[in-house]
Length: 134
Image (cartoon, rainbow, N blue to C red; front, side, top):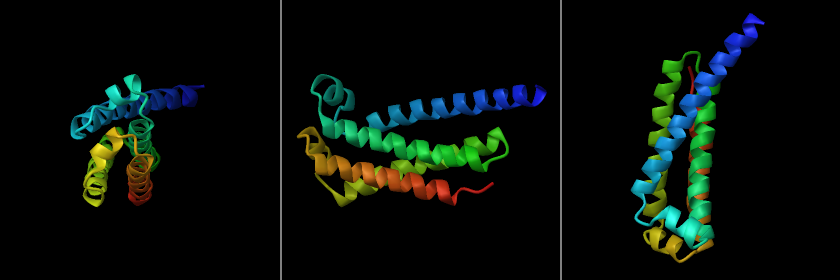
Protein backbone atom coordinates (compact mmCIF):
# COMPACT_ATOMS: atom_id res chain seq x y z
CA UNK A 1 0.00 0.00 0.00
CA UNK A 2 2.87 2.36 0.78
CA UNK A 3 4.26 1.87 -2.76
CA UNK A 4 0.86 2.73 -4.20
CA UNK A 5 0.66 5.97 -2.20
CA UNK A 6 4.19 6.91 -3.24
CA UNK A 7 3.28 6.21 -6.86
CA UNK A 8 0.06 8.16 -6.55
CA UNK A 9 1.92 11.15 -5.14
CA UNK A 10 4.44 10.97 -7.99
CA UNK A 11 1.59 10.71 -10.50
CA UNK A 12 -0.11 13.78 -9.02
CA UNK A 13 3.11 15.81 -9.05
CA UNK A 14 4.02 14.92 -12.64
CA UNK A 15 0.44 15.37 -13.86
CA UNK A 16 0.11 18.79 -12.19
CA UNK A 17 3.45 19.91 -13.60
CA UNK A 18 2.52 18.65 -17.08
CA UNK A 19 -0.81 20.48 -16.91
CA UNK A 20 0.97 23.67 -15.88
CA UNK A 21 3.36 23.25 -18.82
CA UNK A 22 0.42 22.70 -21.19
CA UNK A 23 -1.37 25.82 -19.96
CA UNK A 24 1.84 27.84 -20.34
CA UNK A 25 2.35 26.37 -23.81
CA UNK A 26 -1.21 27.26 -24.90
CA UNK A 27 -0.81 30.82 -23.64
CA UNK A 28 2.53 31.16 -25.42
CA UNK A 29 1.21 29.62 -28.65
CA UNK A 30 -1.75 32.01 -28.71
CA UNK A 31 0.63 34.91 -28.06
CA UNK A 32 3.05 33.79 -30.83
CA UNK A 33 0.49 33.43 -33.59
CA UNK A 34 -0.64 36.55 -35.43
CA UNK A 35 -4.20 35.24 -35.68
CA UNK A 36 -6.61 34.84 -32.75
CA UNK A 37 -7.08 31.10 -32.16
CA UNK A 38 -9.99 31.18 -29.76
CA UNK A 39 -11.91 33.72 -31.84
CA UNK A 40 -11.41 31.54 -34.90
CA UNK A 41 -12.12 28.23 -33.13
CA UNK A 42 -14.96 29.15 -30.78
CA UNK A 43 -16.83 31.88 -32.63
CA UNK A 44 -16.03 31.22 -36.30
CA UNK A 45 -15.75 27.41 -36.06
CA UNK A 46 -12.54 27.54 -38.09
CA UNK A 47 -11.33 23.95 -38.46
CA UNK A 48 -7.87 25.04 -39.60
CA UNK A 49 -7.21 26.98 -36.41
CA UNK A 50 -8.39 24.00 -34.34
CA UNK A 51 -6.22 21.53 -36.27
CA UNK A 52 -3.11 23.72 -36.06
CA UNK A 53 -3.57 24.55 -32.38
CA UNK A 54 -4.54 20.99 -31.46
CA UNK A 55 -1.63 19.49 -33.39
CA UNK A 56 0.79 21.81 -31.65
CA UNK A 57 -0.59 20.85 -28.25
CA UNK A 58 -0.42 17.14 -29.14
CA UNK A 59 3.19 17.52 -30.27
CA UNK A 60 4.08 19.27 -27.04
CA UNK A 61 2.25 16.64 -24.97
CA UNK A 62 4.12 13.83 -26.70
CA UNK A 63 7.41 15.50 -25.78
CA UNK A 64 6.23 16.00 -22.18
CA UNK A 65 5.27 12.33 -21.99
CA UNK A 66 8.78 11.46 -23.15
CA UNK A 67 10.21 13.73 -20.48
CA UNK A 68 8.10 12.09 -17.77
CA UNK A 69 9.04 8.62 -18.97
CA UNK A 70 12.76 9.32 -19.20
CA UNK A 71 13.42 11.24 -15.99
CA UNK A 72 13.97 10.02 -12.46
CA UNK A 73 13.43 13.31 -10.65
CA UNK A 74 10.94 16.17 -10.89
CA UNK A 75 13.70 18.72 -11.50
CA UNK A 76 14.91 16.69 -14.49
CA UNK A 77 11.36 16.65 -15.82
CA UNK A 78 11.11 20.42 -15.50
CA UNK A 79 14.38 20.88 -17.38
CA UNK A 80 13.27 18.56 -20.20
CA UNK A 81 9.86 20.25 -20.19
CA UNK A 82 11.53 23.54 -21.01
CA UNK A 83 13.49 21.81 -23.77
CA UNK A 84 10.23 20.42 -25.18
CA UNK A 85 8.70 23.89 -24.96
CA UNK A 86 11.60 25.42 -26.89
CA UNK A 87 11.46 22.69 -29.53
CA UNK A 88 7.76 23.36 -30.15
CA UNK A 89 8.30 27.10 -30.44
CA UNK A 90 11.10 26.41 -32.93
CA UNK A 91 8.85 23.97 -34.82
CA UNK A 92 6.17 26.64 -35.18
CA UNK A 93 8.75 29.15 -36.40
CA UNK A 94 10.04 26.61 -38.94
CA UNK A 95 6.49 25.87 -40.11
CA UNK A 96 5.94 29.60 -40.67
CA UNK A 97 9.28 29.83 -42.49
CA UNK A 98 8.21 26.99 -44.80
CA UNK A 99 4.80 28.60 -45.37
CA UNK A 100 5.20 32.40 -45.24
CA UNK A 101 1.44 33.06 -45.48
CA UNK A 102 0.60 30.52 -42.79
CA UNK A 103 -1.40 32.75 -40.47
CA UNK A 104 -3.49 34.20 -43.28
CA UNK A 105 -4.14 30.71 -44.65
CA UNK A 106 -5.34 29.52 -41.25
CA UNK A 107 -7.61 32.56 -40.94
CA UNK A 108 -9.05 31.63 -44.34
CA UNK A 109 -9.64 28.08 -43.04
CA UNK A 110 -7.13 26.44 -45.39
CA UNK A 111 -6.92 22.88 -44.07
CA UNK A 112 -3.62 22.20 -45.87
CA UNK A 113 -1.90 24.96 -43.88
CA UNK A 114 -3.31 23.62 -40.62
CA UNK A 115 -2.20 20.09 -41.41
CA UNK A 116 1.27 21.43 -42.18
CA UNK A 117 1.56 23.05 -38.73
CA UNK A 118 0.10 19.99 -37.01
CA UNK A 119 2.49 17.63 -38.86
CA UNK A 120 5.55 19.74 -38.07
CA UNK A 121 4.52 20.06 -34.41
CA UNK A 122 3.71 16.37 -33.91
CA UNK A 123 6.92 15.35 -35.69
CA UNK A 124 8.94 17.68 -33.48
CA UNK A 125 7.22 16.24 -30.41
CA UNK A 126 7.93 12.65 -31.39
CA UNK A 127 11.55 13.37 -32.25
CA UNK A 128 12.22 15.39 -29.12
CA UNK A 129 10.60 12.71 -26.94
CA UNK A 130 12.81 10.08 -28.56
CA UNK A 131 15.95 12.17 -28.01
CA UNK A 132 15.35 12.81 -24.30
CA UNK A 133 17.45 10.82 -21.90
CA UNK A 134 18.05 10.98 -18.16
